[in-house]
Length: 499
Image (cartoon, rainbow, N blue to C red; front, side, top):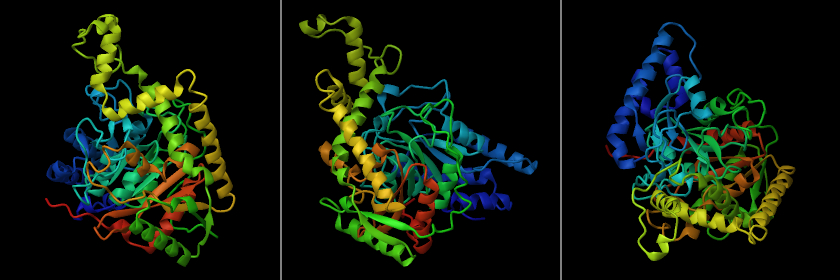
């Protein structure tokens, strides 16, 4: 029997169909590997082995009975812990929601269950998805399987680390400013941010509602396309999901787009870009040229305003979304909020309780973004900051629209550096924010983006290549990514984890 933990999801489906392995055997193999190795990686916050095995046995029974099974039958999938699962803890990596058990379920979770996926566990993340390293989790940081002294990126660092460490063949994350693509790059796997509205956000605990999007992680493009096909589609429960047909992403995956025109984004090769990352990305472009693609330089002139615009829009929406967590109905409630000073005695008890609850429940990065957003929306400043940022957002989208009139897909690095060490950027918020300098504009524009592995540094750290496509052009994006994947073997590299 093959080792299920070294196989792709697509091959595991084929092995089950051929009767060479069962869903229960696959599930047990991954649970045993999690038990053995996740103490090092810390990708998971919770694993429900009993529920996972029960679901796997149910798939096997249906197969034996000749019943039809779903597109992900018997495949373990790791879930970022900001997606609501009914009756199960959903913490968002925060003390504020440490005991929260949703009475409802995210649409994406329901689609995975309907596809007979095995939900193997909930993965770690930066608190409320705010961060680029997973260091902001209230429950401890996840680690990069390629180097345990380095971060896996964030905020979906736990999901990316789980796939990279072969603790799950597939995972689901969310991407608000690069939170799927950046950890995918740092962990050497594939991660895709769909077009805004392509995947339902119902049941995703909101960070920035106009930017958040759920997407897949996999070892290769085929697995990523497989998972996207399951979770994509219109949802009546989400007014922002779009009624756009979902193509069969696998049907023409191995067909290279005809007359492929790639745009090399000039602004993605400036100050701060690591030399090894740049060399790997430029070599990847040469691979595309060898495959027949036409490459031309393009400009996204307003992309240099992406970080400042993002860090006004996202915190403003965060300030609004997180206002509900005040200890009255939602979230952690402080036990002690007695006044300690004469000034505090003048504050009504209810307000003191809210202040104490939010102070205890939120971590420093979440508090920072709430304060930034509240300031940007406050009287006298909204026109100066928030409304200006929205105008810049429109200009950024216009840049992309103009570029896509000249080329089919844009290309550049995903992250300016490979995985960085713990603590290296934690005390410098601006340096941390710049980790997403090449990814935030995709979210501001609402288009689709993917990161695929394209090399390793001399220190054996993964490098990611980012491809961007117009809204709802995920099929083109996946086929373009597959061109590179078929010509190289970077997606087959695995980290060496000592057991």
